[in-house]
Length: 136
Image 1: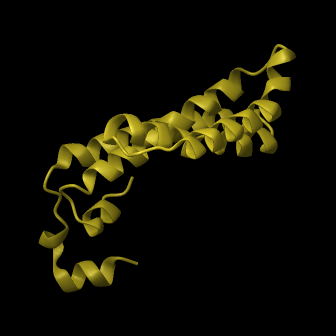
Image 2: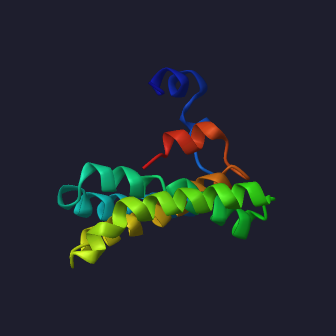
């Protein structure tokens, strides 16, 4: 899809200014994918979906902590309700003695959130075309 743009503007226009940020983002995202794929065949679709909904909560918390984005009480309240919904879906699995793979899937959510926050940080010095082309 991007080949016509790269062909028209030249490969030099898509050269990253700081390649380390691109590699860091790729490594973090790859770690998240590895965790996700380890847990995927071992948990139910409902659990996977519910746990996947925690990623935006982790992104919100990370944006507040690392980028100092303003957060109002209504966002915190919505995040709390969302997290409570995840607990309602996932908690029965923990009471039965299982749940290791649910924890692995849950561990992937903040890792994916970190990947997305790194992408946001990259927009400070990279244009969107470079970020898109260097996508992991």
